[in-house]
Image (tube, rainbow, N blue to C red):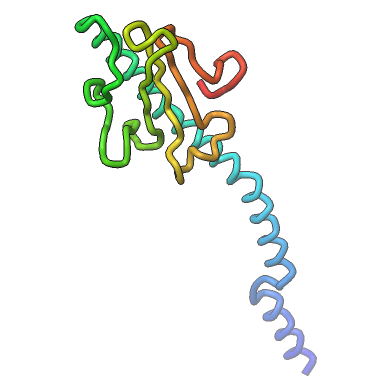
Length: 150
C-alpha cells in the first residue's frame, strides 16, 4: 500500500502548477505590463507626431510656392494640398486637424499653420505636444529648444 500512495503523490506533483505559482506568474506579468504599456504608448504617440510635422512642413512649402506665384499667402486649404472633408482639414494620417491663419502682419506678409491633435484620438494624450505650430518665419511652437515635440 505504501508504494501506491507514493506513486499518487509523485503524479500529483507533476500534474501542473499550484495556485500560488500561477498567481505569482500573473502578478509578474501584470507588473511588467504596468511598466511596459505606458512606455510603448508614449513611443507610439511620439512616432505619430511625424504626421503633424509633415503636414506643417508640406503646407509651409505650398504656402511659399503660392506666394511666389501670387504675391501673397492664402488660408484656403484646398489650394495648399490639404485633405479637406466635412469634418475639417486633416493631416495625412488624420491624427491632427490643420489650420492656416494670417500672421501678425496679415495674410499678405505672413502665416501661422497649426496642427491640433484630433479629438478622441490617441494624440490627445500626448502631453505638451497636442498643438504644434509653424509660422512664416520658420519659428516652431512649442519651442524645440525646450520641448521634445519637434
